[in-house]
Length: 68
Image (cartoon, rainbow, N blue to C red; front, top):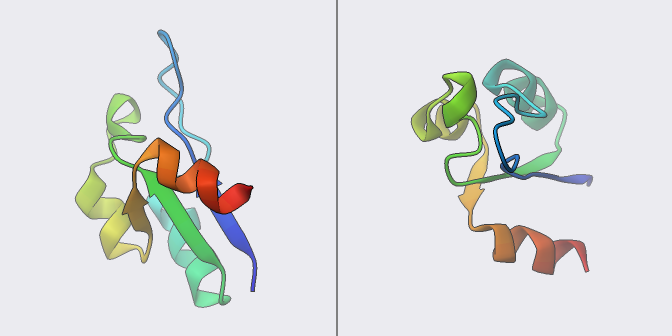
């Protein structure tokens, strides 16, 4: 199973690397997607949208720990 981590961009960046629709497609294909809390807010995607798409909401530290 593939684990994918989505981190919140820093500074004035408003983009997010995965949108909820893409998360839904990935989770349907047995991927585990972890999204940092509020990662999509600047791009107008809520935490609830990511949860509804099947993502696990986690802190940045939790996501980076899993990648190590």
